Picture (cartoon, rainbow, N blue to C red):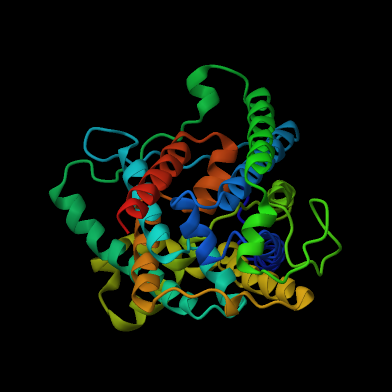
Length: 362
């Protein structure tokens, strides 16, 4: 892959990609703490419909990219003991637990920040702490536990099944988007939005009224496939958020620990010049979410509240788990699953299992 991180291209593309991403997610309301927490309690299915639509759209986008000669780059398997994928699964479970506790993932926390939800500050701070904690604990754990989080092969589902990648991507994308539409039949999105914004006029159709509408149907998240398509073509990059927290962790630890490179070598590869796209994308998602709110005139900050400690610990668990898994819901979900990566499938499965388990006891 051509490295364009040292040019302005990834920064500009990152902000532009983030603005569209944040705008779409704000319209669907999937980023709100209540919506995320309610999904793990099975009281709302907005998050699931957005996820299925976005991954399905991404699969179709990557099928088209493959037709243009762009190779997929799936995440590596992360071992835990003798298992080559258990690290992805267990990391995903910790990530999901954090989401169920704090109502945010690494990407949606910046959308919450953009619209003025105060708990986002603590979720992001907790996320940076989670990245620092993971980086400093990793050498200790790897020294005492055999094969702890060693990177393995980059495998995709089509390779394992021995079938063509493009047909499987197209079939999988169609199936996931169809599943999102089917869920909408049983769990209408307007019911969930009206529960949060009783006075909102939601109009008719999937994209009612205009850009100034309070909310759009979750299925519009399929357009993130187009965002992925452009990001890969223009900036040779893919969506992801938790790596940007490691970049923030580098800034913090390099200033506080003169021996950081010896204590936490994991962070050496996360300097800004290597992750400019991902960092700038988080700036973009905050701007995109704020733009959507300005156009609709309704501020979600008035309906969303997560206790400070829950936001902090949720953010810490979410980012620490994401780094253990090798990616977050955007990196493993929107991008990794959309490329049929086995590591991503394991991580997302773990995310939902961990989230459902923690929600059951909260």
